[in-house]
Length: 445
Image (cartoon, rainbow, N blue to C red; front, side, top):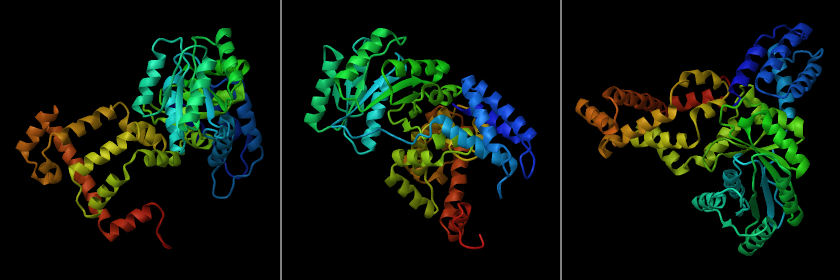
């Protein structure tokens, strides 16, 4: 989402030069480019003006810290202000009610229904027992959509008829009876934030003890999301925002403007279509991602949620033994794919933006599917012993997977490359090399 903004900010900060005290002309040149980058990202112009002035104040007469260059000093100041601009948030769901009740509000099409189930799974990961309730009685099939999504993820579901206050109260009683400590209310939406919608939500909030009122806003709508946030903050009152579709090609203006324009923290971010693709919006991590410094913590957390530890350990044992079969290769492909799109993961690796050009213009998901098809076209013996695959077998595998023999050759070479790495892992020199790579060696490394 922040790709173009990251590129512009990187280019702007590279133009800053100088040693010792940052010269005013250095700061002016850098902030001019930063201002243009933010405006092009659809950030509200008042927010941009305040942001650049605060950065200027931080840098006024600032000495370049030992070990830092002038550009790095500016990056440090920009990063600090970005964290503040994004709301300095690191808070997940608030628990404490009996049960805790979360009311999701927003316009039609913002993603409330899918977010309700995603939020339920996030609560489950936190060790809680969620229940979702369908209160959107106006949109055709909205109740059935939530029911289907909830059943797919094995999340308890409640619906009913009559006033939404009655349905919500019944859902809370059902949760108490079944021992569920979190209730998520999926409310109705409209194409616009009209008076009728606000009255309905206000009645619901007055009738039920709400722990959190969260606005679900589509980040693809840009500054329109800010206007929606202002309307719901006035009409209902909010405790935070969930930005959906952060994996899309939006320019990022909504995320950077919402805090200043509405006073509301962005609490969660929807990062994909899968049920587990909802994350706490950590302002510090997002600021680092925008500035190209990566977000390794989020990448690790995502891996912990999606990677099968037993399978990963089995692959590791094979690697240490110096033999990587195509079954191992297939396991790795599937586990990495489960973590999300490759481009998104590259954003989380420090310096990963530079690698994105190597995959630009290619359908990485399609390439992964092709590799998977080729491996599945092999016999069990061929997967276990790739050295058996000769010309005739290559042609058969190619026909079975709908590719060319040259594609099978490339797959075999890719496995051979990983096989060499496996052999390195299998000896002490390889282990030392890995330790050295990650800065874990002893004195003298």
